[in-house]
Image 1 (tube, rainbow, N blue to C red):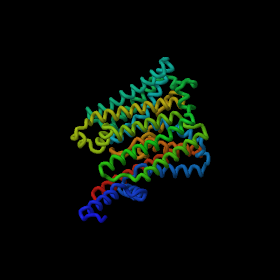
Image 2: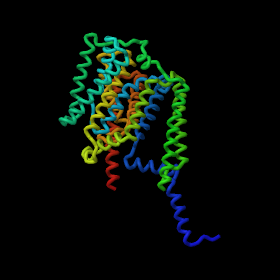
Image 3: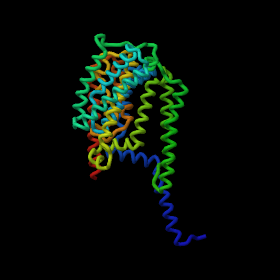
Image 4: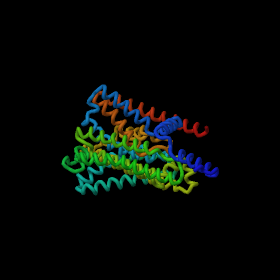
Length: 417
């Protein structure tokens, strides 16, 4: 049967809509990725390249670098400062800074030692007390910023000195407190690893989530007659992620296994990622970081958002200090000093969080601290001095800031174009 003339345009339009609704598969995704990179949307690309380069160089210089047990130790060491870096991400997204996170972590470890070991309080009570102290410090910073307009740089610099003094005061003349080696807290930071079966099971969840969220998004966009991701590309992405994670878990389990402390850090990153990307609070954080005045006019309570960010930053610094104490099995005057501030801030920036506010993800803390810890671990294996580690870390941080600045300029010029 020959179709009538009035049906031909409709059929042609339906076929056109069908072509428009589905993206161009892997080729289209690759072209889209290249376009995003050209426009300054780099994402985690620089840090991924950095990790590959660092791993390649250090494994050539010393094959022990990629040994399973060495990587497990790297994950143990990365967790405490990574937790602090996660808090730094919160304030950097607002275009603010907290220079006292190192001192806050040192004070937290001192509080654990005094409340738990010296005073005999139960460990959960001591941990809660330290977290409350961290929240109070964050509230003070937010009030100084909101009520008096004091720049966070100045407020946290003053806080750095005050918190360091408080740490030295409560530790007393001895200067250090040893934590019980057989306690659950110390074992958590030194020897506790996940069961093999559980680590492999958890490694399946990210791929499953990618599939679930991807197919749900495809269904929604298809129902609205909008373009959607090609299913083959979605399946490839989920398969690649799952295989990569399963291999990483298998390789690490050839050594001691996945540290529970690192698993806790990753869980916190995932929670913060959800909060920043899927909640009203997270959208408000990005809005305030992008343009505080525009956010205020849009009805966002800018002062409350700042308050929440500073409180989270100080509490994550407190958690990092507690993990650091559990890792070292002691609370001392040296805790939180040296390069803790540098590494935490550098990790957030190297991971892709902009110093100018409004751009970055919680994953920046994870990938950034892996870069920092890989450099530190590799130089230690080569028996090189800490001075070289400082110089290399500073150079990597400078490169990260330059990349961020160039990306901002590219986005600005692309927007004008």
